[in-house]
Image (cartoon, rainbow, N blue to C red; front, top):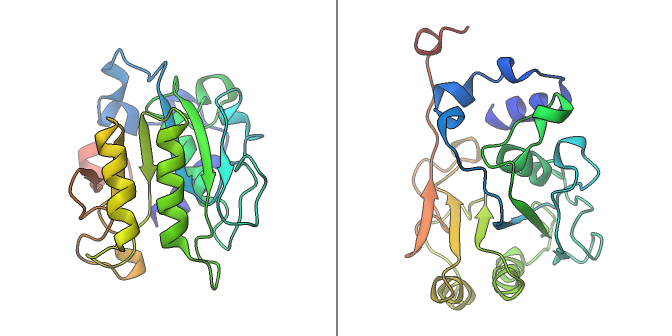
Length: 209
């Protein structure tokens, strides 16, 4: 449901007033917009032609072997996912009438991997992408994904420790119940990783149906 809602937001023209969650979570009160910070999004690839993300990109890379060299050609059966995630982080909706991100001033680094592609070694692709992101200036690495397992491969130990030692913040989904994960899952279970969950506001709490 969350993915469907976010996809609808990407495809629907909205005014800032329509995006009630910014006020509900008090994002509208912060004076910070992420300016000067590079956020690497390790996902299905981010479409750099999307109007809500115009002018947000620095260099990126494809690790799936199926996308464009700079990681901005979405790949896989859920190819929209990386663009959706990027819009929630850095959406420029105040100008386009689309999604307004929580940190619209950040620069985006798109690192595409083969999520959902049969035979893809996404464990190794993620490890390689984390190291590449650190070496190329990312200060935050976003992984809105999960292995559906509390454990992780040895290659992740090296990669994620490398990020930690270089003061790069790694943010991950804590789990994904629609995919059958009712408990926290890697990389959200790894030491040094900031695991993020979500909350569901009831209609009476927001004043909306």
